[in-house]
Length: 397
Ligand code: AN0
Ligand code: CP
Image (cartoon, rainbow, N blue to C red; front, side):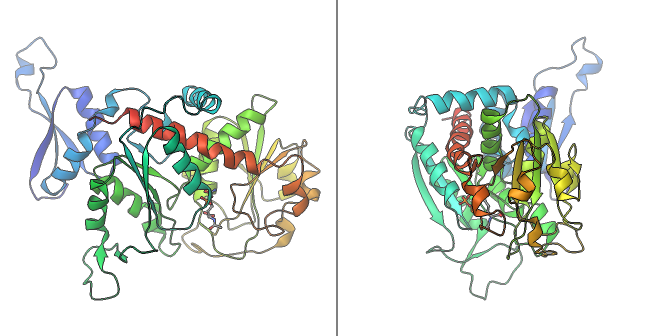
């Protein structure tokens, strides 16, 4: 930790201090636990309230206090941030909640009364914008949408820059200001695909988590798209006929360089819930192992498709440090068509959309009876409603 003086932001028992410390660290705030309990030596009790403190750098004190103002971590199934599958907690519970909401989507319409969702878009969107706003409306929330590139001041994101160019405002002021006008923030901020370290640190998303003082969820950030994967998982659960389906994620060609967020999340979620996951792509398109562990990689697309129950097509650019963000292939033999689908076990076809026809998938397959692209999009409303519901439940007054 930096040497700018330490400040105490929590005093209490050891187990709570551990939760507080990990919550701070998860949000990018370095924290340490200090045990002040000399009395433990003389006492038969292990802990006395106030024995343990959590310390942060003085410069992080305000952000840490804002984060800790909400005590949702001590209650099950409520969320402060939603950026990855683990944030959902018990997956069976999450799924039953999704089905409960799907049956009765206005069941919790009082929960969001007088609460405001701010959706911040650094990039374009159709589904995320509409489904998340609909989810918020299901819960009785008010919604503000900010398209950063349309009408807002141009934002600087780097610290230390002399702002004598075309950017009028710094993200480090803009974020806490946004936090003043809402209770929950959704952020869409794609990978820039130029600097891998910057993208994989999730710099923009983490700055929102750290400086807004509000619960934050990802609406597709640099390395993940959890609301999409949650909806994809619900869709597979609705259509599967065996307990552990074979789910094949296939790379497919695309004329533009796309992020790895969707395939990263899909691989992470589908392995996490225990499906038989196979990933197929040309050599050079390997994803980061932290997302794919538990999946098999098969470079032969036809072999990968054999016996598949679900085929999930997606393009992504190279993730390796050497070729980060590059297009290494536009080989149209990878376009998913009848040829590939014919070796599957009458698989369903999936894609998160937007999709480029006859690059990613043929007209016939996407229009065919096994195409799930519209049900997947419809389930985005459900995944967003579950996530917002849990965040609302964790809000203190
Ligand atoms: C984006 C991507 O591949 O990450 C969004 C997908 C939901 N797709 C495009 O930019 C075409
Ligand atoms: N699938 C998805 O997130 O679509 P949008 O980019 O249109 O939001």
